[in-house]
Amino acid sequence: MDAEMAQTDSPPQSTGTIAEVQGPVVDIHFEVLPPLHQALYTTVGKETYLFEVFQHLSQNTIRAITLHPSAGLRRGLPVYDMGSPLRVPVTPNILGRLLNVFGQPLDGLPPLEAKEFRNILAPPIPIHQVTGTSGILETGIKVVDLLCPFIRGGKTGLFGGAGVGKTVLIMEFMHAIVALHHGVSVFSGVGERIREGHELWHEMMDAGVMKRSVLVFGQMDESPGVRFRVGMTGLTYAEYLRDTQGGEVLLLMDNAFRFVQAGSEVSGLLGRMPATMGYQSTLLTEVAEMQERIVSTPKGSITAVQAIYVPADDMTDPAVVALMSHLDTQVILSRDQAGKGIYPAIDPLLSTSRMMDRHFLGDLHYRTAEAVRAHLARYQELEDIITMLGVEELSPEDRKVVMRARRLQRYLTQPFHVTAVHSGIKGASVPLAETLADCQGFITGQFDDVPEDACYMRGAMRGER
Image (cartoon, rainbow, N blue to C red):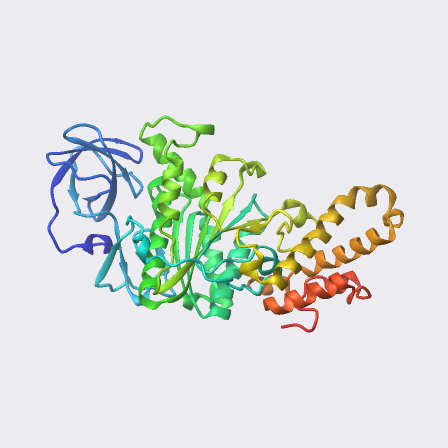
């Protein structure tokens, strides 16, 4: 019997019968209706199908979403109530594993041998057990640590269209948590392409971070119910590692927008009326149910990083706005930056953190970040004039600011450890103190004689790390 069938030793709570199948939507007759979000199952030959209850249609009929391809289902099949919501096995041996939404292995290794299971749908922990954010979580990535620092125990969003480097940044963050903080990472692939998942798995093994990580995938070709719940499975594993191992747990989700899309699909399948721009009317609630569980306790902290696809590069899209309202840090990836060869393609003027505060960061960090932004903003204002008339037409003061801003722009590029195999450039990790010292040097003119090319794709100015 499959791993998920072994989640309970108790007999099935009640038995129902499939009345109607419409794609992933299944209507089932029960004498005693199971509660909403209960897990159900049926078997056809050696195949096991799981369902999740989403609606009570009448006194004797529920509507469920199947979490497997629905081929093989038919009217009259008996359906059994599992007595609980969907649960996944948890064990200290989950590190280094590649799993699906049910906690089953996708890496060809034996199933998890677990004596404990956890519901993937759980209420947030009580407020009195939650601890607040506690300082900066250094990543070794210069532009992030300087201008949009990650908050220990906070939530960060990587916003960008297709192909601007969200997934590469996420992989580098995983490397940083393992290498700098000796923590663990949980990666939740929501609607990932099979090719992307395969490449990520092998690249993480090549980079040496897989042994301190867990990968959970709900692939693009799977049921919308799977893509809707795989983020919850990843969050459940992050909560387990926080509660049992303590320390730093990095929860990564790629892509949070696909979670919203899956919810929209489920809502449409259930016949609900769409709301703004075709999104589901329950958008804000569904986003909040996940985001409010990403919290830290005295046992350990969960720091979340979520890649968020921006449809048509429109930051006012309702899904983007709903996700943004829960975030502490917003990292905006720009197609213009990528077009200039600036990687990571982070927009230094739009990216920010709610903790960009003198009292939280300290006077040195705050002053340096503001000065860097001022230089880059002035350079952006003058770009059209430079294009039309040339830099020689600027005043001496503006010319000095522009030349320093150009060097800062190139200095904030960085080679990554996880791309070293492909780029041939050794990855660099720069401590925040060195980043601040280098930026102070650029602003005060210490590096005015350094060629711009010498600032590009390197670590610290005072020697590679």
